[in-house]
Image 1 (cartoon, helix red, strand yellow):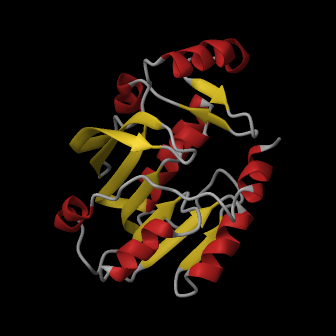
Image 2 (image 1 turned 135 degrees about the horizontal axis):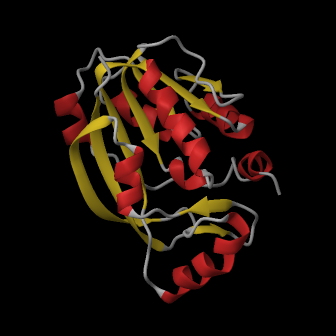
Length: 212
C-alpha cells in the first residue's frame, strides 16, 4: 500500500496523541506569530493553538483525507494539501514551524533532509522549529522489526505495520545531525503513546533557525 493511500484510508479514524508542550511554546513564540504546521494531519495541534489565542495559523499535509477531516472538524483553520517536496510558501514566511510525528512517516534520509531544508527556507531568521518524534526502542518487539526490515529499506529503525504503513524510529545522534542548522534550545526525552496504543521512546525539541 502506498503511503498516501494508507493515510487517506485511516484519516477518519486515527487519533494522534503526542502531547503539545504549550508552556514552553508560548514562552518562545508570541501570540501574533505566523505559524506553519507541516504534516498537520487533521489539524489537532493547530486547533489547540487556536483555542489558546494563536490565530495566524496554517497547516499542510500530503493526505487529502486528513485535510478533509480537518476542514470538517475545524472549519476556521487554514489547512492545505501538500503536493510535492517543496513547501509552497515564499522564503522567510513564518515565525515558527511545527513538525509533529512527521519524520517517523519518512523512511528515506534524503527526503527528511529535503524537508528540513524547506522548513529552514520558509522560516524567518531566528524563527523557531518545534519537533517531536520517535526514537529507537530496545524492547524485543521493536528490535525484531527493526532487524526484519533493515535490509529491505537500508536503514535500521524503519519498519512496516501490518496495516501497511512504513514508519521509522531514529537514533538521537541522527536527529541532532539532521537539525544541525538549528540552534537547539531544548531537547527532552519522553515516552509517547503511539497511534496504535503502544509505548515508544520519543523526544521533543525547540530549535532556532541559524540562517542569516
